[in-house]
Length: 89
Image (cartoon, rainbow, N blue to C red; front, side, top):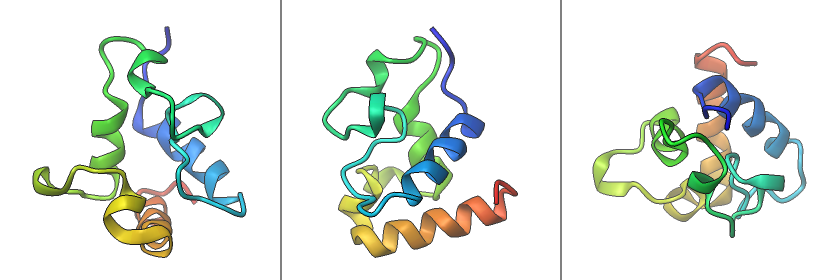
């Protein structure tokens, strides 16, 4: 199995942001399906949820999916900013 990395996360986020509906889509899951468990799709030594939360600086206190924390527009805005700051777009 392949290791889930920040670079993979960013590439998959860009694909999600191109879609009409960005919420309930997990970048680490197969076909971006929010109902799938990403931990089952990647190597044991990677943590997709931790990478996702760290990518937009979610704190330990609020480690839920970004759309649940910030709403669809807020999550998309924070994601776009993080992609720009990290040089992915």
